[in-house]
Image (cartoon, rainbow, N blue to C red; front, top):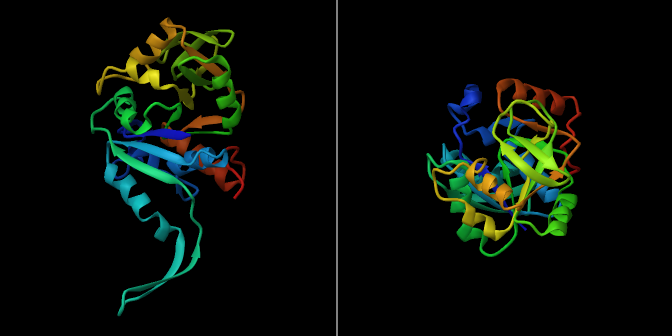
Length: 256
């Protein structure tokens, strides 16, 4: 199944790093956080990635263009230009890099991925949040209810978009309200092709009109994830993730 990753935002709240690289490329344990997210999907067999680019798109493109060399040991014979590979630790991923506009909002970026998805169910998430989510269980839940969209609900602090629910039905989607029930939007969506029709264009925020419309149509369901989830929104968040990785206590890490 294809996976859309949103990797085009400015990342202004973590400007210590994003003056020179986009937020999804900020490293945790020596690898971009984007790589960590992709590795989670890969572990569950989802290896066809479409990355929605915007701010400093060239940094992401260069990383994947030279991915094989970055992850290999090799000898270059400068006289002939011959390259001898000694060791390669690579991934069998298919990665499509799509420029979705420097100033597009999250919904607009998703809308621009529609031609690459076609008439298929796909998965979608942000390029800055890691989790120990069971993606197989998420997908099974989505298939069981037959609605347009599933959003993963998680339980961290009150500074994110809150979900109000009746059972598994989402009854309200509020961007950064006061904390009520305690469930928030953790990303890790599953969407049906019809959801693209709820997005108007580049100026549309995914978290507003499209998901609010899905709520009003009773087409948005929540998969409740009680495990680990952490976004990298600030330098403090980054330091936390780095510390967990360095101590060997990274719940999102998958076996090699």
